[in-house]
Amino acid sequence: MEDSKPRQKIWSGDLWRLGLCVLVIYLVFKYILLAAPPAWFVRRDQRKKVRERVEAAGGWRALQSACDGIVESNRESWFDWRSYNNTNTLPPALTALQPMEVWYDPPKHVRGSTSESEFSVVHIRVFGMHRTGTWAIPYYGLELVSGTNTVHYVFRPELAAEGNSYDTCRKITNGIYEISGPQ
Image (cartoon, rainbow, N blue to C red):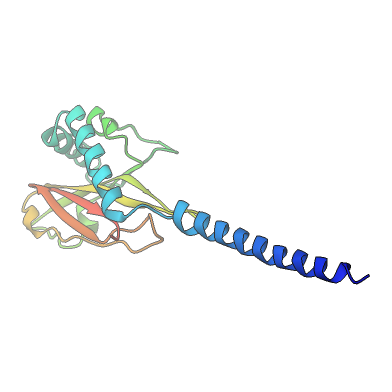
């Protein structure tokens, strides 16, 4: 009977150590192995992929030309294309970008556009997805501005769930802007 007491003490100490090891492994797995890569790293990769796709599409002019075609075809109406439910067709230059979504705002719905300075915006979402359980893919897309007097274009941030929102605008060339999510 006296031998059972020291043995019980050793066993309870082993359980405590085992529990601590399981906790450490869980925390390492959750906060290190499942952690999102830094935003600057993801953004660099996204820019590289978009640049390669734009070159494959024929360059920025081909992309602008394709967007101008969408604007001309849909002057008074909305245009909406989604990779999972594509009801409209995309020009080849836009298809080469492999977008998730493409949508068009008619001039009367664009902030800053007036009858004297009419312009339209074609939005192209290339990356970005909200996730639950793991890290979200940051938003990355393009806005192509077409029409007269595009200098009056005003960027509109979209605040939504992580991966679906964008708050940063960077000019690439005349009428073409890089739109990205929170850094």
